[in-house]
Amino acid sequence: MWLLKIDKKGNLEYQGLFGERYYNDGGSDIIQTADNSFVLVGYTQSADKKTPICLLLSPTRGAIK
Image (cartoon, rainbow, N blue to C red; front, side, top):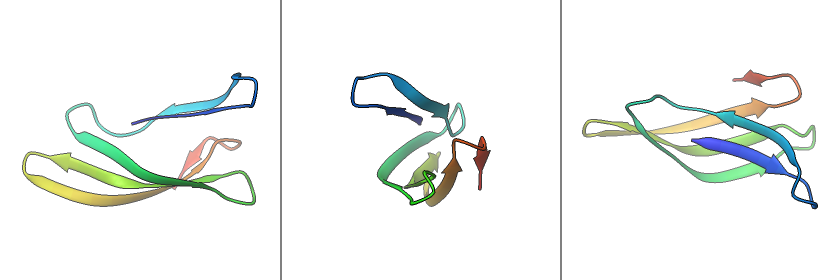
């Protein structure tokens, strides 16, 4: 998955790639929190197994939880 945030003028504020090369990953919802982190909900799929995922992303700190 490729996540990016742009401002009102179209300037890139943040971007990140998440997931594995050989998996079929997808996001279904994203929420920006009060501290400017993001919660991304989606799934990862390898072979015939689809697994729900939830990532807490903190672009200002560069951390994924």
